[in-house]
Amino acid sequence: MFDNIRSDFRAHGRDWGAQGFWVMIVYRFGQWRYTVRPKPLRRLCSLTYKILFKLVQIVTGIELPCEAIVGRNFVIDHFGGIIVSGYARFGDNCRIRNGVVVGLRRIEEPSAPVIGNNVDIGAGAKLLGPIKIGDNSIIGANAVVLVDVPENSIATGVPAIIKPRRSSSLDLHDH
Image 1 (cartoon, one colour):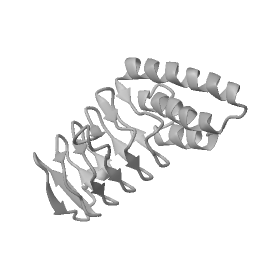
Image 2: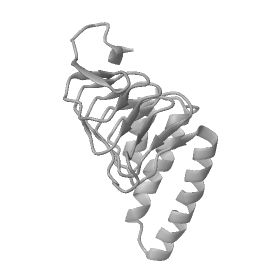
Image 3: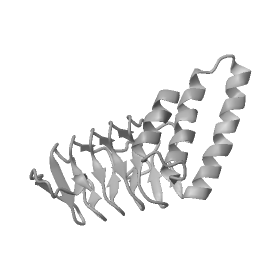
Image 4: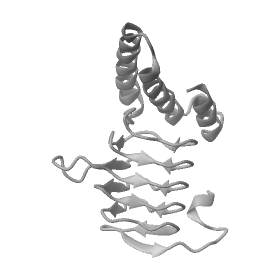
């Protein structure tokens, strides 16, 4: 847990005030609590997690349940309106911004996106349903992604149009 938190701290620019970092501390604690023995102590940790989860959700406007799988160096840029399903999965070095929803397409179908490594998700983007987002992809601001995105691609628009990503020093990921 502490190695991940140190990594998250570095990924958030070593900024104790970064609200995304606060969310990651609570997330990592929530994951760690499942390893606690004996059971009464784990229950106390679970109660603590639930209180911290709700507090950080209210204060930051970011919902990242510990049931979601999040890789290393996950960065939450900007405040608020971020909802991640507990069914979602993220690889390493991903970045999401305000207004992003990564979740279910239908309540009856409990499956959410699986996101690869080095994926950059723009403000207001919606990724819904049982889709896969390939490594090194960029999801544009306000894109609505309902289909798989191959690796090294850019998805923009409503519904999203997917294009191959061009290598460039001016790429969105380099900001």
